[in-house]
Amino acid sequence: MSWGTELWDQFDNLDKHTQWGIDFLERYSKFVKERLDIEQSYAKQLRGLVKKYCPKRSKEEEPRFTSCVSFYSILNELNDYAGQREVVAEEIAHKVYGELMTYSQDLKAERKHHLQEGRKAQQYLDHSWKQMDNSKKKFERECKEAEKCQLTFDRLDNDINATKSEVEKSKAQLYLRTHMADESKNEYAAQLQNFNGEQWKHFNNAIPHIFKNLQDMDERRTVKLGETYRSFAEAERRVIPIVSKCLEGMVSAAKAVNERKDSVIVVESFKSGFDPPGDFPFEDFSQNLSRSGSDGTISNTPKGERDKDGGPPPRSDPKHPMSRTKNKLWLFGKKPKAPSLEDFSHLPPEQRRKRLQQKIDELNRELQKEQDARDALNKMKDVYEKNPQMGDPVSLQPKISETICNMEKLRSELHKNETWLSEVEGKHSSRGDRRHSADNHHQTPQGRESPEGSYTDDTSQEHHTPHPRRPSPSPSKPVNPNPDPHEFDDEFDDDDPLPVIGHCKALYSFGGQNEGTLVMAEDEVLYIIEEDKGDGWTRVRKQSGEEGYVPTSYVEITMEKNSKGAVTYI
Image (cartoon, rainbow, N blue to C red; front, side):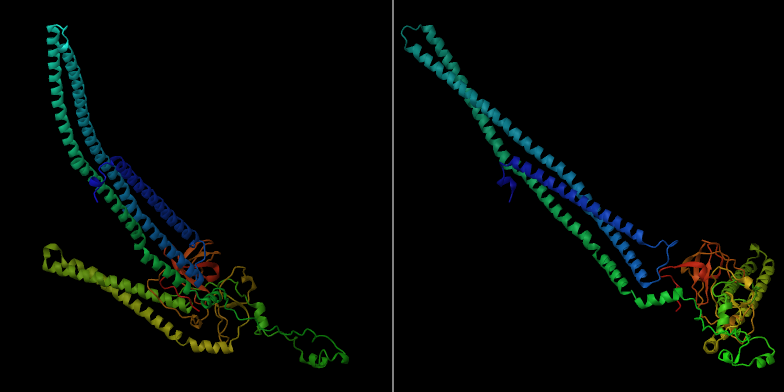
């Protein structure tokens, strides 16, 4: 249905309607802007919330518990969800709000142009009507004047007293007025015909064309609103798959909570590794007392027999659990200084194995570099032999000989370290049986236990700084400040390069006097590259790249989430 034919006389109402359409478009644009602000604020608040509750890895403890890991997984998913809200806001800003604002400006300009054309057409028609109306009024006046002149002439012509000159004068006036009336009539007729033609053009051509343009403009506005409604919904629907994945990730994180695993982590985190203390023995101090016969209930050994023995009063067995409990250093003690050996035999088995493997890997890399250098020199020598003008091939021979010599040295060193590693791995494979036997017949020699697994009776070495406990040596072995490292029975896997699986903060300073240990200052932050495997030592790396072992009880450990190589030993 066309506005031009049905609403030809409703120019003012169409003017109001098109203005209402633009106002409605701008109102919807304002709504979209407010929704856009809400989305941006929501995403910003979500990101702030995630940041607030994410662990501060330099201060807080790494969430090793499944409940904590799941919570931080949920935070990560929520952060991704916030990102999707930002995507929605961006889509609405560009594809809805931006287009609406541009279209609104274009629509205002177009409406103004069409209305100006309509007003011009109406003004031209009004001007034609005014000309026609003026000619009509003039014709009416001339006719009235002519009628007056006719009455005057008739009166004088019938009056016998009127002179001939008066009659002639009246007749001339009548003729003039009649002629003027005829001219006004012709002019009025021409103006009327012209007005009727302009009016027909106005209501059959100009106004329908203008109203059709207004109708097209209003329909395009309606279509544009529908498109922006769809774009508004599409911006939300596009992120639904990713939002669903975020929610699925949260559900998966909730399912990953395992109370048994958390309990195991608690045990692993706080167990000391010490055996429970044995029963306290009864120490009889009454054997040196003289008793009468009535006091025989106290001592059944006659005094003479006791004097006959001539020995000192009995002492508590130094290997008795009570004596061991009294003299044992427990978690405190000074670590004895051990010499550094080329085969790392002064280190515990895992540490020795790790150091040997690192040494072998380092030698392999150096050997590969030397081989690459030799191959490059040989290629260069071939080029010089084929093209003497490029260089003297003989000049390269000393460098080639030096490279070959270096390769032989590296191979010899590599073979030696591989032999030591094989020895460690061979003894390591048989520790399970020895450990089972030690569990059944284990006794601890008298003395204090150091972090290295050695014992000392020197009470001056006691300190009040916590040290990790190492497994006790077999009772069949003599007391030795440098025990056989093969008696340790922890296993480990070697990865090269060793990834960072966490970080730790030093609670106390540590001297690192032994080979393989690392000096650290209090409050120093270190990278963890190997967890404690039950021997009380954790392998760390400084920010400078220096690596070594530190006592686990000396540091506050924070493990990285989903880190490569992170293994919890139970």
